[in-house]
Structure formats: structure tokens, C-alpha cells
Length: 93
Image 1 (cartoon, rainbow, N blue to C red):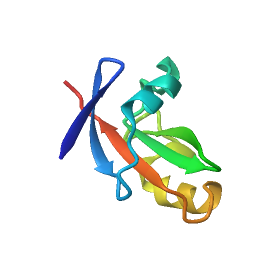
Image 2 (spheres, one colour; image 1 turned 180 degrees about the vertical axis):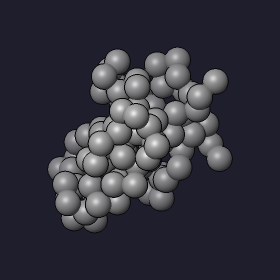
Image 3 (cartoon, rainbow, N blue to C red; image 1 turned 120 degrees about the vertical axis):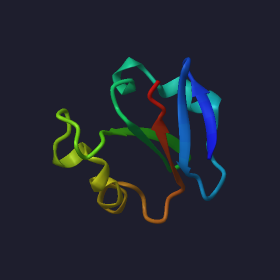
Image 4 (cartoon, rainbow, N blue to C red; image 1 turned 60 degrees about the vertical axis):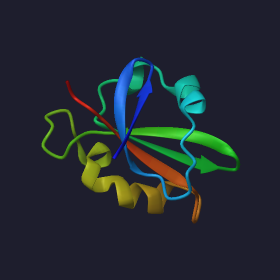
């Protein structure tokens, strides 16, 4: 389990098979919009990083398209075919 700090918040890297996590690149895109999310998916399409937030499945804020259980379907439906991606999870203090 590798931990990283982004904008003073701690995250655990859950998936990063291609070793593409770049803290500087994530910080440049991570705004306060993403702070409430429990998980962040980062995918590269056409050489550009995109971020998408997901909630724990039992969160009251979650709906179908932002539940963690929907993540794999999201990758298949909305990400470029066989794109490189990573998933990080917020560490709650």
C-alpha cells in the first residue's frame, strides 16, 4: 500500500499497473470539487489526464454513476479503449 499526499490530503494508491501516477499532474487538476469523493480515477486519453470522483457504495451522496461499484463500467464505457489509468482512495483521519 503506497500513500501519497495531494493538496495536503492523503490517498492510498489502489491501482496503478502502468506506474503512471504523477503527483504534480494530479495536483494541477485536483480542485476542491474532488475533495468530497472517496475515490479518484485518473485516466489518460490522447495524452491528457482526466479525473473522475467516486463515493463509497454505502455513501448517502452516491448515485448510480458515482458509486465505486460503477468504476469498472465507467472505464469500459467512457474511457479510451485500453487506456492507462489509476485509482486512489482518500485516507480518512
